[in-house]
Image 1 (spheres, one colour):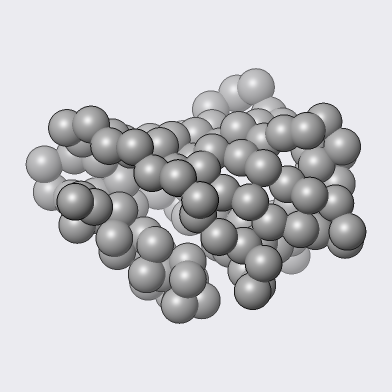
Image 2: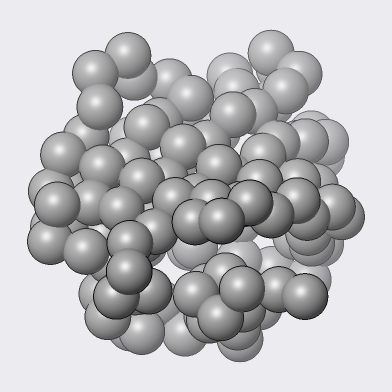
Length: 128
């Protein structure tokens, strides 16, 4: 059974409702980018990254293809196509007792996918 916080995340992503992201995040949320070594700390920063990712990956070809759950964490595998490049990745998500996301880590493959995503994410983050 899908944990409620993960179902809310999936509903936001699949329903293209990025305005609902903020309520999903804890104040001390941390985002771990596949392209940046340093953790991106805080709700506002995590929200900026997830909003940009929702814009970039939002589309009919994005889909979760696997889900694994533990007590307060989940791994969601996804696939998408961006500019003709196949992207395969995982979202590693942890949450607190209040059902708010505290940690969001993204990993992407293959390397060409990362090379395609990095400049597009940078551009979206600059637009803010």
